[in-house]
Length: 636
Picture 1 (cartoon, rainbow, N blue to C red):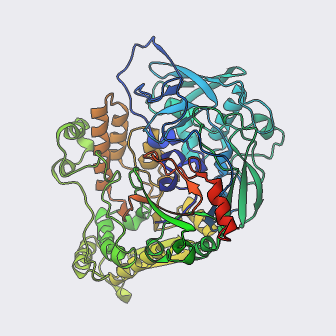
Picture 2 (spheres, helix red, strand yellow):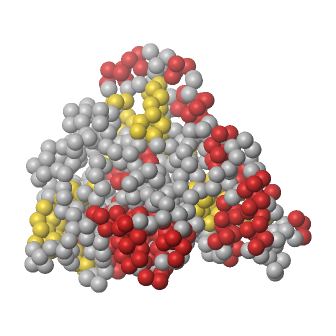
Picture 3 (cartoon, one colour):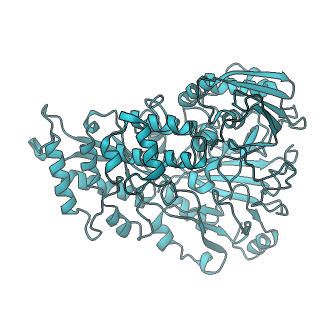
């Protein structure tokens, strides 16, 4: 329900983590084949762990891209809040939107499959069957926007930047994985890997790391990856920063001299001459700006606006199109996340009691116009979603893990979300259950009608949220707090400015937070450890709860060892079951569509890919429609 740009559900899995410098490989992971002959060397134009590639070496364009899409015009979008940096890879500061458009990678994933990567900067790769090393062969025609060639030295330098100055969770994980990176010649780079760690996510992680100009960084020692700055590192991507006005707008211009514009991977993509992002103080101001034509494409996140706000004259006259487009990605596991480092949340029964105070059904009917569906699973609506009690391959997988698996996980139905009365906010039946659980957990009502433990400490729950949240989401948080207070919980909701919220989120300065940080998973790989594993739990930005579970760790590690689709699916089903068992997030609902509104000049392919809306790189502007809008005064 949080609106952000860019975002997972808006742009698909491939862009979910780009703004933070983590490759999509770490999030999606890979499926894997049985071990091949150890002397076998695989050479290919792309990569998947199974070895299956939907596109042959001579493919002409991605199936979901329109190779005849016209080039031109401007995509204009909105962002709310502020920015003080144009470096998206720093832990500090608040980066501007879409800055990652400027950087190519050795290879990139497609949006119509899971775990398939094709060469961009690299024209081919070769690797041994055990994935102990990989060699990428760079395209000699690849250049940065300053005209200098992209070389193997740039690739090695960029990799080391992320290890030495990147986000700690990424740097530590990849630092353990990669034992060597060397430029064999100007256009050949080799990575070697730690053979004691899983072979999953090795090649796609190093292959999907953004590549910077080594010369640009070395020209000024003050330039660092981990510091906010308004100077943009030289890249080789399709767009380049054109202008910016702090907290007002950012404009990117498509490079006429982009070296990769005719690559099969890019045919029919990157169709706008410019991409402009307008900044607004909050969602209300942003929506008014859209109606006024200050920007022309909007991804709606507020159910109230979607249900009641789109009745303005330009829409009625056909100048603006309201378009609900199917979304094939599993929904983001969003909701209220407990900070497990807080001692008051150490008891799972306390967390379950507090969850009973969240009335999703009331929020959906009263705030969200009945447009959201309830979510139980971390991979809701997919064949991998855990159901009932473990059976078949999933049961065998869990049993093989031994004593780390609690007996009740094998015998009891999977954890599901409680149901509440939609007619009233404070469902008395659930509040009575919650009260009993809290009493039993040692948090009875004491002085001041507040729940206190034996030391007299109150059961404190502070939930900060940014001031630019959609009104419906903010109200959902506030009403949840009202129910917590009715239980005697020392609960508060704290509205803060977006910059302060960003800082507090990074430092985990909260008891509970409404978050969209966790990601769904369709395959296994290192990203599961980034989000749900223990090693980086204390500081990973992708694990806002700080979950550190031996059970979850064991499942993730065992998933790496699966060597066929059936076993991998069983492992991921078991992971879903275990994550729900750990109960560190109170799920909210989801919408199975992209809610879009745009001025009637945008067009998109007849068949969009299942895992992306693609408005940044697959859509285009019809010049005749654009001219008609301008002639009629509907567009500036």
